[in-house]
Image (tube, rainbow, N blue to C red):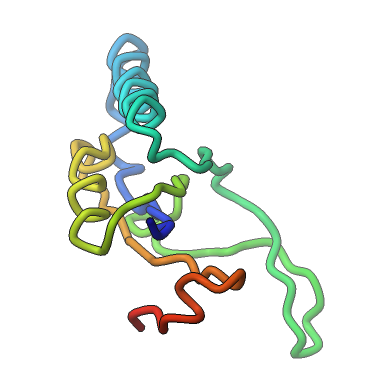
Length: 124
């Protein structure tokens, strides 16, 4: 099976209006979804990301704070999952709780340099 990165984007604005109890419930949905992926032996990694970081550029700017994307498209986290193909990965992504918070999931196949996807020619 191939590995896919599910990149969780957006949804930050909807979290701002949640009560503490609603926030706990929202996090629990992520924990439950992640546990299901583990039970199905699909999970290969992932984590929530802090909203800020650093960007390294080679154009003379050096290391700068960032990245700065529009709030509605910020990357909040990622999961690496195994799936048979893109359609299967889409089915996995449809269960992601970010979809309940006006966010979306970008799906990208990971290149397997050990002879998997790279050898067979991954979809671009």
